[in-house]
Every structure is written in structure tokens, then in C-alpha cells.
Length: 286
Image 1 (spheres, rainbow, N blue to C red):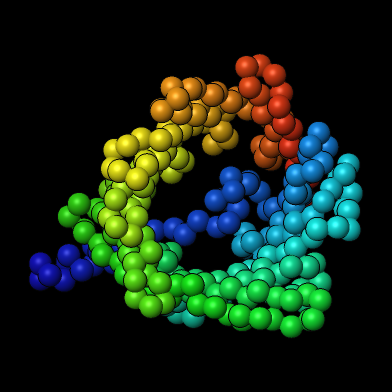
Image 2 (cartoon, one colour):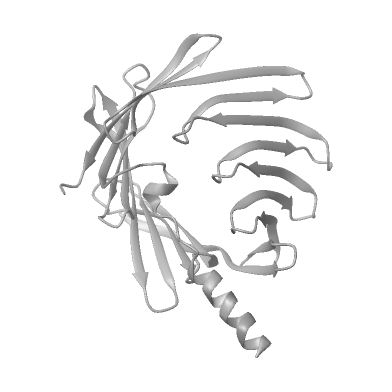
């Protein structure tokens, strides 16, 4: 009887886990249909438009040159996302193209998730395309194919090892969760098991601190600290160069639409605006 009760509790706990939509991951509120990013102050930056379906899944992102929110024909490329789902597996296919007409495939990533939204396998293909000769060369080179995941229920920790297709280790990372399954910290390791980075997160899953290490463990190179407002928007970003003992602080100011999504972002350094980004957000009709 005790075994049955424990199993039932585990099933109930798992069933309460919610998988975040792409809108939630991007901190977008409401029934967003598309988001156009552009900067008039810095027109050399890539601009982009992301389109979402009514479930909040990202279906494509198009990158392009932009001036005054108008498309410029040069330097476009596109990413598409396709979703497949059966009773136990959700699969996402990322397709990246050199061009906006989706003729020249640049790369392909296939991700598989379980019911709880955990990534269980990922395959990364790379296609180098000869545009002039209209043909691929070195097509679908397999970058890596397998993730091995080990979960420690007692410590609420998960270790993931990512391997090349030939079986050699690329890198690994350890994630630690609280009792609500929220990620609270993670550590990344190089193929030689040396520590490369440490992340810590606040109660809403937002990164509050990142420490980057050098070739030797605990040889700190950079430290980044982020703070957020009550809408989960970053308001302050502090960068510490530990070797040069330099500190750079950026502040962020926002203007919001009626759905509390920002449509104007100003990045400031020492009180001076150094970059401005605008967003044009289109919503599905109710």
C-alpha cells in the first residue's frame, strides 16, 4: 500500500509541472502574434521579427536590416520552428536559412522533450551551402547526437553530459532545483571536467548572477549581476572584470503598452543613453 501511495504522489507532482511557452520565456504577456525589434539609433544592428502561433509557440524568426521600422532587402536570413507531438514526446525542429525565401538551408536542429518538458535528446546538423552553384556541400554534418541525463531525486539535482557523434564528451552541466522544481543554480564544465561557469537564479527563474572561469578552476574572469523589476524586466546589469578590477554598470529604462510589454528600451551607462531598442507588438484578436 505504501508503494502505491508513493507512486501516486509522484504522478500528481509530475502532472502539476507546467511547460513554459515561448511567450513566457520571452516575458511577453497576452496573445502575442508577432514582435518586431528595431533600432533607429543603431541601424547597423540586425533587426528581427518573431511570429507566434495562438498557443504561444515561436514558429519563425526573420532577421534583416531595418531603418525606421522598414525592411531593407540586404542581409536577410530566417529561422523556422516546427512542432510535432504524440502522447509522450514533443519534438521541435529548428530550420535556419541563408535567405528569406527558404531556398538555402543553413542548419537544422531537432530537439525531443518528454511530457515534463525536459530535453531528452538533441541532434544538431550543419549544412554549408554554395549559393553560387546552388548546391549544398558537406551536407548535414552531425555535430552531436546524444545527451545522457542523471537525476538525483534526494538532492534535486540533474547532471547532463553532451557528447559528439563519435562518443567524445563536449561538455556537461549540473542543475539544482528547489522543491517546486524551479531552477536555482547551475554549473557548467568543460570536456576535461574543469569548471567553466556558475549561474544562480531568483525565485522567478531569472538569472541573477553569472561567474565565468578561466582555464583553471576558480580562476575567475568575469562576474555579472542582474536585477529586475516586478514585471521581470532587467533594470540593472553589473559587469566585473576581476583581473583588471574594472566595473561596468548598465541601467535600463522602459516604456510599456497596455499589456505591460515593453515597446521602448533605453540602455544607459553612467546616465547616458548608449542604445535604444523599439518593439512593435501585434496581438491576436480576441
